[in-house]
Every structure is written in C-alpha cells, then in structure tokens.
Amino acid sequence: MAIQLYVVPKSLDEYIEKSGFKIKFLAETLGVTYEGFRKKCLGNAPFRKLEADTLASLLGMTEDEKANIFLPTKSTEC
Image (cartoon, rainbow, N blue to C red; front, side):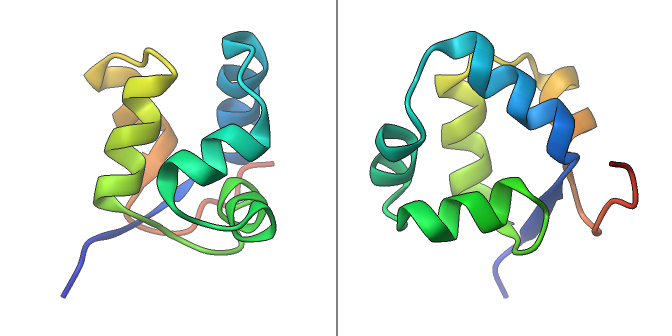
C-alpha cells in the first residue's frame, strides 16, 4: 500500500506563495489536476509520498520542514 500524507494547509500555502510557482505548474508537475492539487493542499485528499517529496523539493523545504507539513494523518490545524 502506498504511503499517503496529509498537509497542514496554511503552512503549505505559505511555502507555495513564497516560491512564486503557480498552482497550475505545481499540479502539472505532480501529474494531478488543478482541482485535485487544491484538494490535497487543503487537506481534503492525501498526497502520495512521491508527490510530497517532489513538492517539498520544488518548494525548497528541509527534511524537518517537510516532516512538519506532510503528516501521516489528517491535521485538525487550520
């Protein structure tokens, strides 16, 4: 079974905003639709581990930052 990870939504949005990348570009890079990517970013759908690793790399996250944003269970933090 593939590892699925949820995000802390506001934290991920901050990284995306700082990166300057467009949502459409990030979604296409991960091979998902724009809508699917937004669901994942809002914590309504999980990221696969490879997607999380790729996105973290694109956004320049350290391993610690990645571990604090991509969680094995859905976050209740808003």
